[in-house]
Image (cartoon, rainbow, N blue to C red; front, side, top):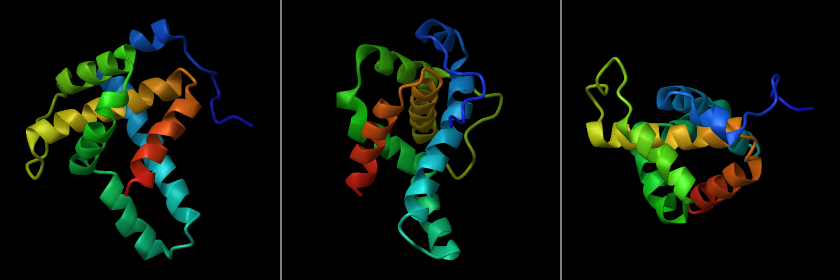
Length: 134
């Protein structure tokens, strides 16, 4: 059973989405990956929440992008660039560095793009590189 009710998009269709739309879905996909990983570790709810917060925040995601940056294809790098340059209608939260916030948006846009285009193996490869290295 697939969680995708509407199937996947072509690269062209996903590429036509606004980078913030890609980041919107990418944020959720990344959090599900982290929560799934944590639930399999057998932690109690409190510890799962603490660990999840360590992986799902702008500072961490900016660091993850730095880890995988050199492994990205040209198309993936372009999605990240679009995400970094996207401007939300609000500034970065006051406790966040604007550069990290932009990098995190790029990371989330990449995950969203890969998810929407059905590149689950690529997402798994990226997650393994990040989570396996922590």
